[in-house]
Length: 155
Image 1 (spheres, rainbow, N blue to C red):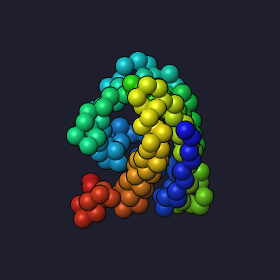
Image 2 (cartoon, helix red, strand yellow):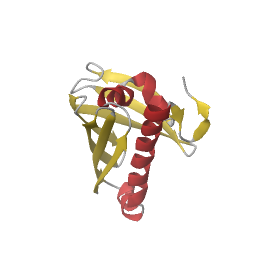
Image 3 (cartoon, rainbow, N blue to C red):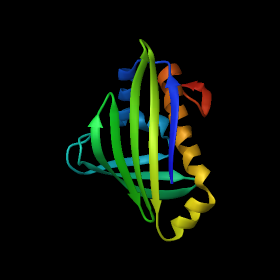
Image 4 (cartoon, rainbow, N blue to C red):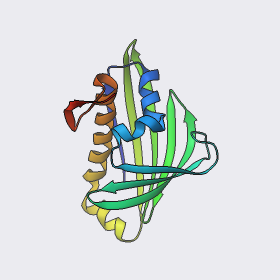
């Protein structure tokens, strides 16, 4: 399964990619992320591996992120592996004005075992989750807010 999602963010590309890549900010736009543990290599560098732990709908999920290519602020490619799922994701950040960024993400999933059924039955849930994270980063960048709790200002 492969899909592409794009959105524009009213912030300069350097600001957007800083929020995208800085571990201190990642949990603000991916609040389900419980922890990040560097397993191998230098954080943020190609070849590095990080264990990511998420809590989604009351269930804990663990995956390994491997950075394939880091050419920020233009492009970032990584893989995510967990039982039954292999995902490669390429993120492109394009300056479309002095203070505007176009963020495009291309995701490809390969499923095995039971997850083949999940991928087949609910393909749109993966795209929706990607778009949800992208919209959270957009809100954080543009308004310094959590889109799920707009009245709450983040510092």
